[in-house]
Length: 223
Image (cartoon, rainbow, N blue to C red):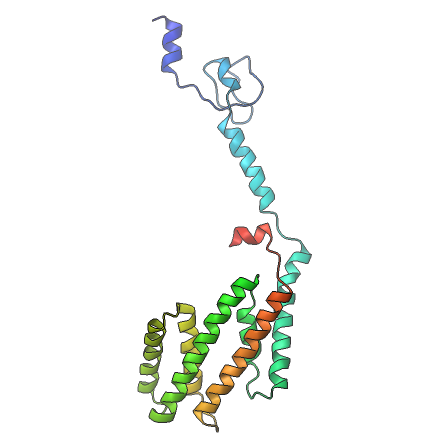
């Protein structure tokens, strides 16, 4: 084996450059500075060029959204909250603030996401309000009843195959119905809570269906 063939077989030649052929291999690649063992290696596709191009494409994708796109989400949530509040007041419900709170929780970027959140909140609220009214009417509002009730709501959620978000909403509704003392009976408080939450859910779903938010590339990266 000649010396030239031995050098060619032992050196690891980088297959990395797509730029013009560089006659003087000692100059290396103008982008990454890699040196080539022979001039023919300059004709291969260069990994640093690919990485450089991917970085440039990623930078273009991660451009921040315009002010118009940034204002869409707060505008949608504001409209949902105000409409839910007006609907609850028009219905004569006693604690109208639960309607806009539910609307703010439910309203999402698209109708499918809003529908999923709405189901979790509606099912959880119905379960928690029912259990809270039942225990408050028959066993009182003691700490022991509250603790056993929260645990029982969790067991019922698991038995009904409800997911964790529904279980959380059920525990919240149960706590409010059981612990907050009102002049009305616990069953009336539970019914009011369910109606107030339902008003907010309906408003959030209606807004998501009529005014879906267009998801930008920046939002997809954050997700």
